[in-house]
Length: 170
Image (tube, rainbow, N blue to C red):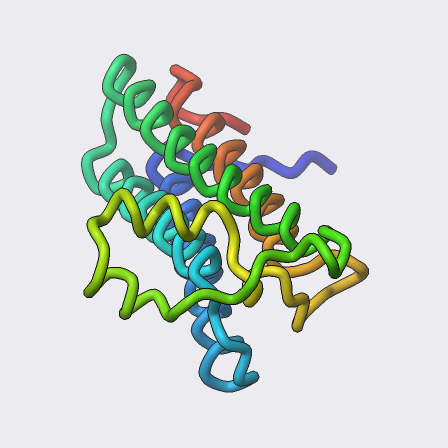
């Protein structure tokens, strides 16, 4: 018995959007229901997921052909690589020895109110103590590790949906 799966580019782009939306909904669930406080790096990872999701949605609605589809793939991939870099930095901070963890800084709102944007970004990415806390894990991986893996999955979906040139993939 052969199973025939017809996934169009458009449906795969909608899948990427739904996956990104699911990630954001779980992040909000973890923050407001499980009471896990989001650190600055968590918030920037969310921004990258939201941007990737918006690009998937635009691509699904637009349903581009050939060159434009590849441009969308490159934009989605770039956004995901940015998110992966943030996730990797977060995992790095979580795996530092206790004596090497940077001290906790002021809140993100205070930083944006007080300092120029590039100074805020520099302070956030040089680390903060609250980003080193692991308060959630699943099968031994912390949430930023899972977000990194999810970004890889989003890149894979984008590749299938937007880099291929046939109408149906499977």
